[in-house]
Length: 278
Image 1 (cartoon, one colour):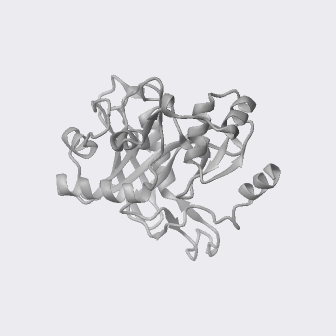
Image 2: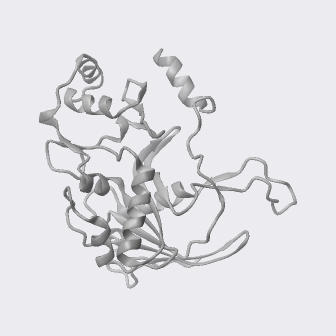
């Protein structure tokens, strides 16, 4: 595998402006996948047209996949709130004391949650659109002091709308993934996850295919949107890197489905945690 990279603070000073990956795919050749971190975007505020800002910074091509951080989308749409405007209730005060957090922040988490799966040592929430995350994805980073950011309430619709905006501005037909940084069960560290996507299926379904030894695959479903989101998160960074959007070019197409989230009956971990809370 040959790799070259730049256009991200992680690789400052190198000669190329994109990560190029030469590899082989099962059903064909996956040549020259290029990953481009989009730098130079301003601090985003409510009302900003981030689709236009991105198109001014980076020429897009048909078939590109554009991954954007949920934080900039939410800030542009006004999914933010001053902590001073939040009045915590009894449950928020109880959980804030239990976990050592600001009760106003805890109330914001409760307001964003459709269900509380775990209360301690942190709040683990299910959101209305099916995502399960720590503190409902409510964040205080990459925003002014005293403010909180919420995840988009309907990320799938957000990805559809953003994709249409890009099409109207650039004339290019691309895929869009909206990402959020999430922790993982059984492993330390956070990775990027897809919370909304458009122009592709979430899952690449290998069931029914045959492996190198002629065995029929019965289980394998590859969460491609999460894999792309994870690499996008690596390029974006997590502090002051200033790369909130990443382009993936020359990705092969895949087929599958969008059932990324387990149903409540399928999700063993969720059900065990809920029993503990009960």
